[in-house]
Length: 434
Image: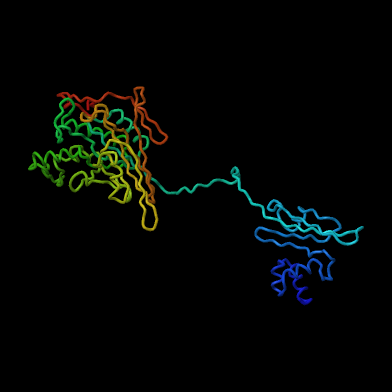
């Protein structure tokens, strides 16, 4: 049997907000005994049936007891007065205690509530016009590089050439890289001669020089680099296969020019030094030549072919590549996963070609080639983005170049035919028969 002091302390604890079970345990009495005294059994300080007002809230349940009143308290009002949101609680079990003089009774409301299960439904996003949007755009200078290749002069496409020159003149990129096969040299290739198509070596040299000169004149502020391709290298191969003892001969040194270039080098034959074009000379064959735009973006001519050529080109390197050679256009991306879970993206880009597609250069039937080139944008922190410039037929006698939000148009021409004769050897710089 609990003492009066235990009962009083337990009731005080309940009135201060402690649950009946916790209050009874704290003073060392049974919960049923405490409940009995709370309901008026033997408690002289409160009318029979009167409960101590208060609130008890657990995770999913709440018990509310109103103070005594001359009228029954509204359940919703009782929840609000005791700090509960009626929208969060439901299924009330209500008990009304009544006592006192029948002509002037007292009432007390006891509610047992269950927490409502909240259902989240999607709603439209809240539009706050006063909050401005700030992009995390990185500051810093950026530089543009045109990556052009596979012109195969004298079999370059005149309309495509005009479009490239117009784009160079308008955009004035900081750099340009010629990926190789600027000239074709079909008569000194390892393939059998094709008299109906092939043009002499001298025609290839003359038209290749004019093509590069047009680029330089269109964008004189651009720094040009040139890589060798397998077609450019046919001069070197011809010397090593058929006149190996003539390989490497140079013009006689003079006081003014003690260092002379090889007499039959591409650098000398195309006047690259005069045009301000830097030749990337490999230590060996053309496959070893490359130009690094950044430490993670490299331009090569390329030597792989086939549908999987871009993916294959990335397998043995840890940087991104831009290549020509295939006469196709594509951008292939590959994710490299490090041991600590970090991701690095590699990109392999096929630039397309700037040669004629009609006739397949005399060796390909109905080739699936794509005319165009690539443009690389590089920021000061090493970040880069490579995109493709596409040249296509409009179907109305014109070709158009699509690059970013710009379009250039040029009249399409039939495949160029070079008729070299005595009159051409006397032509000046304005000769149009190249």
